Length: 140
Image (cartoon, rainbow, N blue to C red; front, side, top):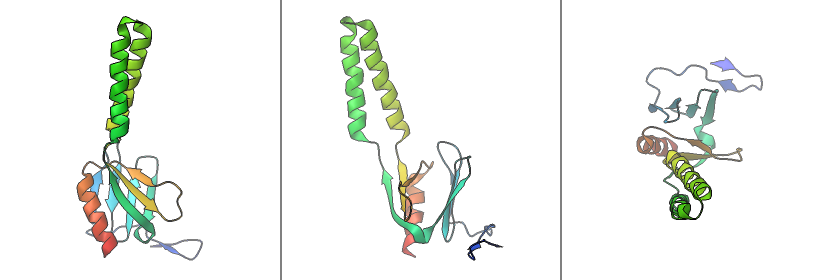
């Protein structure tokens, strides 16, 4: 343990066996749930969240409204191809890109943290297991 400048102690080493969950993120990186903190490392520096500061945890499924609207945009673009190939193709491509981005953001684990304006979002490989372990850790 290292001593922080504000008088609080900062745990720099996680003892072996203190992890409740360790896994990878779909977007690259790792997520580790310890006994008293959650560490999300996306490669640009770890985000450390104290479990006492967690307000709410939820698993966000596919945004169905956006998925249906994207599919409708693809359909509109395809139906418009006989009127204008350029404009119809642009609508179809825009809808396909939107559909791909919506699918990529499926199963987002949203963690609301006290003192943080936006929730922390991560995309674990196994979101159900991490959610169950995180709920178990918060209820302890």
